[in-house]
Length: 600
Image 1 (tube, one colour):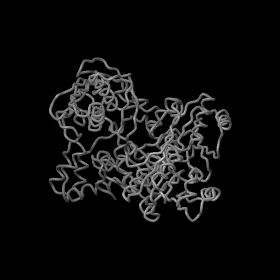
Image 2 (tube, rainbow, N blue to C red):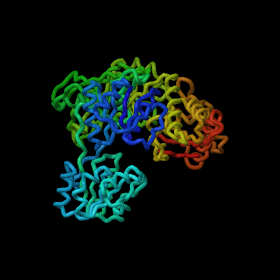
Image 3 (cartoon, rainbow, N blue to C red):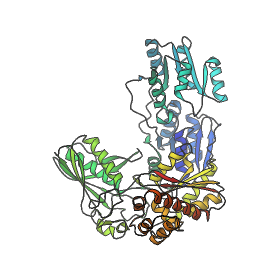
Image 4 (spheres, rainbow, N blue to C red):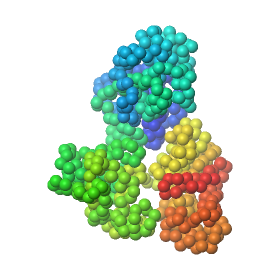
């Protein structure tokens, strides 16, 4: 059993990750007012001391604790540390992301330190944004100065403030859509005090609003958590930590893309070329900001030049590149401007067609991996020029087992990856996982399901529905039809389908499973659709001769584009209605840059 300490944004994230396994887990919060709504979470509430937590761990046979509680829940963190040391089980900490500490903020080591510094700065009127539980901590200050506290608008918080003896007339209440600037304009304090609560705690919004108005900011630093806790930063690193520490929890194990492996190899090789210490482990920052750790090996090294390699682990995904060796050769350059140049070595394909984001004739190293490698280089070598050659021994043989030739990549594999990770795939397991995700969305009260094909399209559709919870967004991969069937069966009445152009042309032609193994782009269909939409003769001809679906963005212009793409989206939604007849379906057509171009 896994035990989660939540009640926070990070707690909900942890629950969303664990729900992907479809297995029960414990979810603990201090109060009982908020329910998670997950069909898998067994919720418990109330404070636990060390003895009670040890008893819970032993009774429920807990093998992993996930600490996703508020960073300032210091007593809870200490209790978790003591109880898990006693029982010998690991702790994963879902940590918030914190902006760099700004010089415009007065940083304080404790509330006592903050009161001393505020007194020394002559603060007479204070707005406290530290929460109801700090009223007692800050009593020596508010008993002598004009203080306003903002607390949660709930009975429990009001009672706690009253028990502390704080005047009710000096309390304001927090609501999710509050504007920090409006509050500051209403209170007009000399200073605010807040906690280093990270991005999910709205720290930057508070600081920015105060700074704009010339209001001093005092911030209490976040406490240091036990070093034995395994820190993770989000969904990807949490899942990988659970896979490692509780191997039988998820039915399939995730992996890493060739782009992530190449970035690790480049980092190791550059360390060697620069003569830096290297311990065999590399941290790679993924496009979403999380950092994963990989083993790498430097295989050759001299000043200014080195090679390194990483063995790709695709997890339980049936990926032909699983186990392949990704090699990076790095050479420092004295070229003016200090640019970074990419070259393809053995086993890396060559791009022959436009539309992949790489110039034809260049190595098949996709834009996102290039960006990841460039950022890794600049971390170690901020201004110098570097030549990077990526090789995959045996890559040409692997290429023959792929469909790369269809998209114009020849004689080798592509270095790819938009999210940096490989989500494990078998069709039956994938559909089962999709069904569970839809069920979780219903259980958590989502009245709209937002379907998207993967990481790139999800970033786009999230911008349309920023207020929906994570459970509302589901990756359908290629299984559009089966996701819609699950939505209909679960009673979801509103569905949004985000479509990249390649999937849209297959869906519009009537294929609810868009996998390239099962269906190819139908040029005759595209030409007939253009004709039915009233496009020009030139546009009809172009639609029937494009090499790749993404080229439609280039050949359809002006009025032809409006007619064709709206017809394409309309036909796609009609196909969706065949398996989702009683709900409301919205379609979003997304271009290769992640921009939503058409919506209906």
